[in-house]
Image (tube, rainbow, N blue to C red; front, side):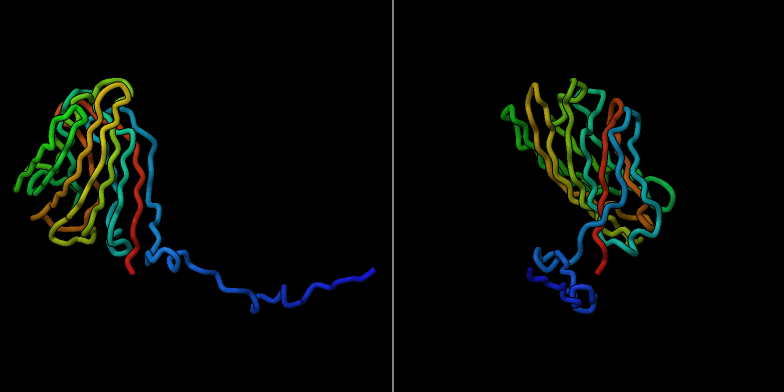
Length: 205
């Protein structure tokens, strides 16, 4: 009976092949890093996502994915306000919005050069308040490290199993304040809001 001995080089770590980064295969220089997450909340006036100060020195961008987001009233505006220097900014928002509705209306255009909050408006939310009707959307948030303005793009859809669907996308900028951006909160022009979220960071290179 022939015996085969194991090659001792198999146990020599200096002979092992180096690990390969997935970035070399995807051409994406850095992977996204999970920051925080929460299951859908109970309905309240505000849904706050707060990451505190100093995050901008590590991450150049945050990607915030909201899911099962809903409001208790029908047809409200969804409001978004960023937090900096310990408080939420309620002025100096520039915003744009395009929304469509599967009932054939739209596209609806919206903009404001000096609003009290960033907002998603229009008939896209006119079925909020119905059972199982919710939306999901993603926000790409830049300038976390105390720049003179925060810029963001967002896109998403209203998912209504028993009725119409809607889609929307837009941008907003908060300007005129100072200090690190520390969070973002969501509310509605009428009624309460609820939802879950996942936040990832794009590391600085």
